[in-house]
Length: 286
Image (cartoon, rainbow, N blue to C red):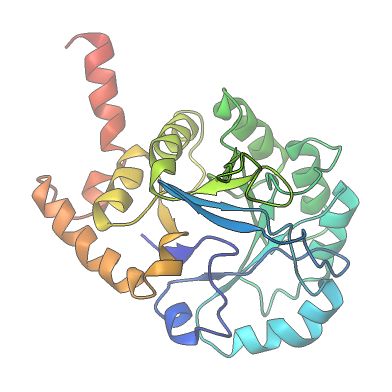
């Protein structure tokens, strides 16, 4: 099991020691052109999590390739580049420019709730990128679809090498004056309350694919990570927890081993897909 960060939840150049404590580092989403992002305020705490409407703020593809990527390569962990855009061509052009000697994997951000989406389907975007790169492609999908499995099947058929689940949910919070707390209005909701949504999505995805899955959403402890593994995740990403606890990667790893033993498993690998066996037994009545 590899431990990663969720895209946008860690600046490796500002916190290099945290990045080095991960098994792979996922960049903030890169778009073809520079983006200032949405107007502030664009981050707000809620009772049970966090809302953000950053809007894919980034220096753009050219600056990323010339300046950011070489510096990230000096840190040590394999680099996963999160790629975004507003059309399939945007995604594909960026994938074509990523150097295989510096990039271990591409995570296609197909589900950002804070910007206008590309008109093409997730599968069409994956197919366009597949034609342009031999790098591994992971499709990061939204938890909003009722049948996540259908989307997973489609992106796998289009050439995806793996799945990332889940991105944030769209949410809204109001101030004391009943105005939205974020300038954009709604934003992406993350935090501990997202875990049941992530577990359901990973479980559904594992039912229809043998592709590797990175599970994320609401992970704050080793037990949380173990539950994602039991639902079918091969790897786990930490998100909102990194804002409050930069030592979370080390702590979660330690807790994960303890959680596995506490649930009667010899190792975390032994717990893989354990939740599926339980469901099958209950449904079949045996």
